[in-house]
Structures are given as structure tokens and as C-alpha cells.
Length: 103
Image (cartoon, rainbow, N blue to C red):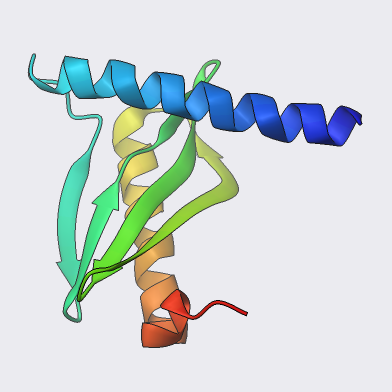
């Protein structure tokens, strides 16, 4: 039950922060960055957790989307973007279109 509560809290917190960051984005915030890699669109959006930023983002291609969150964390927003971009590129290089397949 504790694990389920923790997971639920993580998702609720990320959606709350997503709405905050979208409103802050209009004020010059760099909470989200867009990149291209091998024909895929990458949006990095590190998730603020306390004093650090967890790797998070979206990979899109041809109307398909894959959301990723990793355990990796960094101490700054900019480093969070760099690490999120690295992880997204790694996923694309290793999996390509298989990234979007569901089992």
C-alpha cells in the first residue's frame, strides 16, 4: 500500500507541477526544451523534486508519444535538461520505433 501511495503522489505532483510550469513558461521560464534526434521530437521537462530535478520528458514521432521518467537526478534545471536529453537520445538509439510498441 505504501508503494502505491508513493506512485500516486508522484503522478499527482508531476501533473500539478506541469500546470505550474506551463503558466511559468509564458514568463520566460525554460522548464521545457524541444530537440530533434534522428527524426524524433524530444521535449525535456525535468521534474522538480525538493532541491533536485528528476529526468523526465516526451519522445514523439508520427503522432505517437512516449513519456519517460527516470531515477536519475541533477542539481540544476539546465543539468536536468541535459541529462533528460541524453536519456531520450539513448532510448531512441537503442529502441527506435519499438519505443512506442505496447505489450
